[in-house]
Image (cartoon, rainbow, N blue to C red; front, side, top):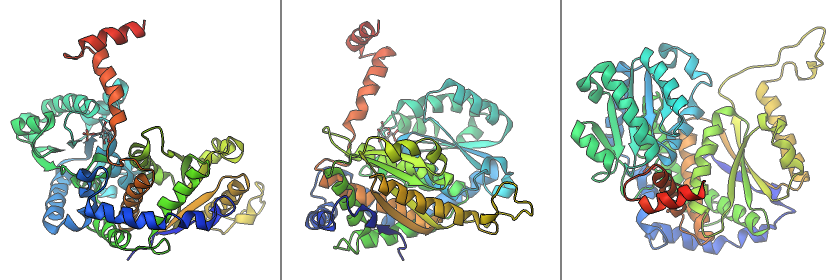
Length: 450
Ligand SMILES: O=P(O)(O)OC[C@H]1O[C@H](O)[C@H](O)[C@@H](O)[C@@H]1O
């Protein structure tokens, strides 16, 4: 069953319902194009059928690995960047206790997941190793291409640390590589060292890979139910790949609404949440939409805020800054916990008017009040709601975002499955570091920096 809902009522007055519904026919064609694999980037459509293809054998193998890892490690290091880590982190942080790092392993019932290889900060990695000196740990290194610099450097450093700590054979038992089936430096290394490996399928790009072992292994190690997660995605797949009208298909409505916003002069979409645990869902969404749509000098700019925290910083800009923004609120109907505001006899802080109310009720009124204030400030709002955060609803949500992204990219007439622009910084970095083969650029760039 799908329980994700999308509401575009608060776009009224900015774009007409007719303008949104005018995308209907195109969306039906794009849906077919995706399923028939006849559109742009059609060699990267393997993600569409992942929810059906992830069978019991795959889930069983990952869950078995997760049990073994849990038995040997207090900490599990996930080495990867971009699509090779954001999906796992998004789901894990959404499901985790907010202070998982301060709980014991027994309380967590699983190793603590930490992340490396998503930056090149010396301080970050050195600080991480201080911690890894003190705890039992294991790690996975995830890179589809197997050649990305950030995770490759982190893995080189951490591999040395792991081998010094446990010896080569035991270190080998504690490493799983997730990469291309046959190509890339990581694949070569994994073969040479004898690491266990999982494959990122050729036709699944990094940012669409959360339903492969790239996302599933870390999520399982963190103690969450990957079967329910895949089931959620499967339910959403069934809906968004078959429903042919805007009213039935939430991916149609989201893709159409955001394109109508863009066409009306609002090129910035801010994803809003009211739970800090959802910040990485926004980070994952930013990569998905930013890399998929930002090309050929077009695309909606994906930004994110976490309210009410950011109402005390970015709130001012959203309310009164340049009117180029629309918001998409990810609204959660029911919290996982139960906490009420206590009553005080002297009411010195004047808060007795909320005494006895759940904190969630206060948060909810903040959400509704903000929605109206922002709409009054000329910031239209789309609302995506989930009854609660759990593995099933997250599976639905992530697949919904993926399918809507593919449709939205086609509406913008770009290839939503490539990211040619990402290479520019890499080439410069290699040249500046003096990588063999980049000699000419090295000289040119160094001159420009003098
Ligand atoms: O999995 P990898 O090949 O290491 O790629 C990791 C990430 O970095 C690349 O530069 C791309 O921009 C991302 O789309 C990708 O997810």
